[in-house]
Image (tube, rainbow, N blue to C red; front, side, top):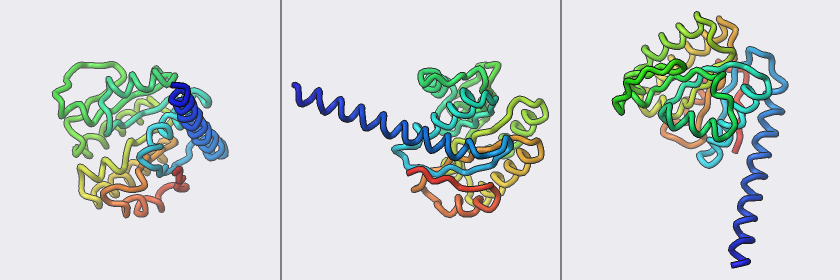
Amino acid sequence: MEKKYAEQLLRGSEEKGLKDSIKNKIEREFGEKPKDFMVAVVTSAENYFPTDIAILNYLVNTREMKGVYVAMNKPYPTLVKILQNSNIDTDKLFFIDAISGNLGQDEEISNCVFLSNPAAISELGMTVLNLCDEKKADFLLLDSLSTLVIYNDRLDSVKFTHYLITQLRKYGLAGVIMSLDKYKDPEAIKDISMFVDNVIHLK
């Protein structure tokens, strides 16, 4: 029993060390950037959500920026609960939920727009443009390019991401494009690398 307890403590310590390492790298990478930075963040499946949380913690809690979160992996109710449990101030976030439309979500929520499905990139583009016009945020986080490519043709996904980045720059907003390091079409991240300030790799 003592051995099992010791193993649990070790795993907890390792996980905390990993989270601290990711947090420190995010603060170092993002702390050097101007307010309207544009980056792609590439990470492993294991570190994906800790990285996502670390970025939001730094932008929302530390720099006190308001953001738009484009959710293509988790539905709004699940995502908000996770973020709140991670001490992210969700009052500073507006959500675009591209998943729940497939689940029949039709509830009206003041800080969330529900898209019809993850393949509706024209609908997503118009929603982002409207939010930019309304000055709802200081940054946008796309979660994620990997999922966008699953539901859409790679060329269409790259063109859309380029359009998205162009609009964010036009309105002076920062942008974070999340992506997995191993997924269906790894060429997509290479295609958008010329549109962002830099690509941050977090293994």
